[in-house]
Amino acid sequence: MDVFGNEELKIDLKINGQALEFEVLPDGLKSIISWLSDLFMRMDRIPWIDDCSILERRFILFLDEIEIHLHPIWQRKILPVIQKLFPNAQIFVSSHSPFIVASVSDAYVYKFRLENGLSRLETIEESKAGSSYSLVLDEIFTIDELFDVETESEFDRFYQLEDDIMHGFDEKIPLFLEVARQLMEKGIESREIVGIELRQMSRILNKDLSI
Image (cartoon, rainbow, N blue to C red; front, side, top):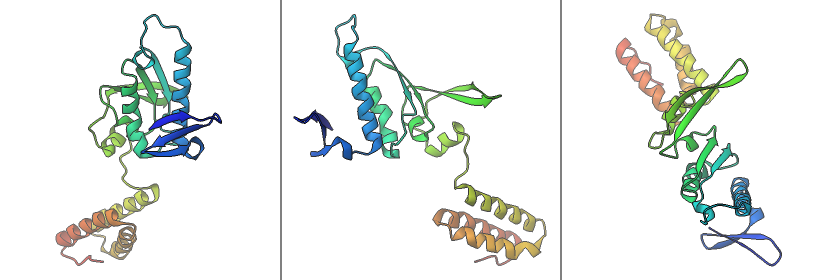
């Protein structure tokens, strides 16, 4: 991507060989270009002892929720790009995105928790580059659910009915199968999970629980 100005003092960009006006870019990309431009301008005005390029200078950079307005594809790329752009900078980033947390190596993750209205440091862990997003969600953000809140609630009901039936409450089988059918209609993943449970129960109870 190349950035250049024109005679009307407008900013144009060339991305993959195609010239685009700055205003047509998505908000996330415009935000990145804006704060990077502002950073370069401010750093250029600071008198430095050593005569080196801006990109080689040693400084501390604070980035607050860098993922705002960024598509997940860009969230996965932005920090590695910033690290390569400023190899001598010490970078602090606040984020609520598993894509950001899992995007970098040679870094630390500081987890904070809210206690009595105050944010307190809970743990310090090594960054999660190389880990799956589901693992990052579980270990860093303490989210182990796979689906939306409504679907998770239906799965809780499904497993509760399953447990009741396994303990002899056969009268709940029709309701259980109805809940199972509703879950299977939600999508491929939920259909596969429910299908496995139904086959296991059919084998254990020696009952036909097919839908």
